[in-house]
Amino acid sequence: MSKLPQDVREHPIPDPAELRKLVSELRRLVLTYKFGIDEVMTKVSILRDEFRHMQNYNPVEHVGSRLKSFESIVAKCRRKSIPLTPEGVRAQMFDIAGVRITCSFVNDIYLVRDMLLKQADLTLLEERDYIKHPKATGYKSLHLIVQIPVYLSDRVEDVIVEIQLRTIAMDFWASLEHKIYYKYDGDVPRPLTDSLKLAADVAWSLDTSMERIHDEVKAISGDEEPVASRHNLHTPEEMLRDFWRAAEADGGFGFGSDA
Ligand SMILES: Nc1nc2c(ncn2[C@@H]2O[C@H](COP(=O)(O)OP(=O)(O)OP(=O)(O)O)[C@@H](O)[C@H]2O)c(=O)[nH]1
Ligand SMILES: Nc1ncnc2c1ncn2[C@@H]1O[C@H](COP(=O)(O)OP(=O)(O)OP(=O)(O)O)[C@@H](O)[C@H]1O
Image 1: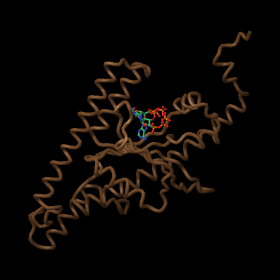
Image 2 (image 1 turned 30 degrees about the horizontal axis):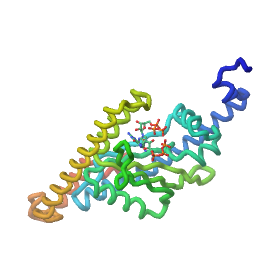
Image 3 (image 1 turned 120 degrees about the vertical axis):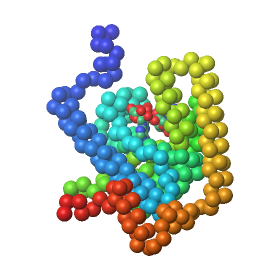
Image 4 (image 1 turned 180 degrees about the vertical axis):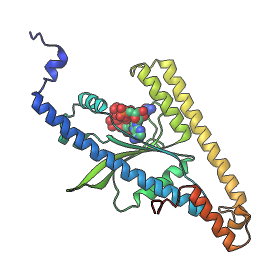
């Protein structure tokens, strides 16, 4: 019978030189995922700014990102029996680069999804619609696993990014549920899971009510408010000046600042 602890027997400690090489390779790999996040964030930011300027409407409330931590990658490799090698991680772990887009309304989620997927350099690998098919926990979000090229100094690398799209209510629910899940180490007592399921239904009801009210108001006031009444302007020069100042204040005309 071996005297080694279970963990060491299952995961023998590799040679230090090998370990150093592995860590350096994984670091390099993770860096390319960071560039993948940057690419997607830029796309979302452009869509957001353009939409706001052209349509006077912003479908994206908030956008955030996270690079999976080294500890979390190692833990997931162990949990899912994924080889802890650059090849294993690249082939079997699709959430190292994560972008989360929070929208006001459910329709906006699908609008942003369509706008992103129309872009030629973004390839959809997998879509999981937990809005149409919520998880048993009550979890709702739209997940897209996409692939995007990243131009490095000596090569082009296709990087996989997980994009989660959700409403503010869905996000509120998911962050509380996530905290509770970790607090109980995954073994959440039944009364709490029941309460969470109920809260998910309430959040969904809020989402649908808010969207209905928003649609009703839009139908009454018309899709587009006339530009002149929005700005209370009279001459084209005044309108141009106002747009220019608004864009400057928004950081929209950031070019030429070094001049
Ligand atoms: N709060 C919360 N988040 C969830 C839940 N299910 C999925 N997620 C989020 O969505 C991510 C991906 O989940 P899935 O689409 O179910 O992917 P999966 O491959 O089945 O799960 P993992 O490989 O364990 O991430 C998770 O890492 C979480 O960030 C849930 O029930 N509650
Ligand atoms: N696509 C994403 N975009 C932004 N944040 C995310 C994304 N996916 C997860 N997160 C957040 O990143 C944090 C850490 O996530 P981590 O990758 O360690 O675990 P996880 O994704 O929740 O679970 P698992 O490791 O089982 O896949 C959590 O707060 C989680 O909500």
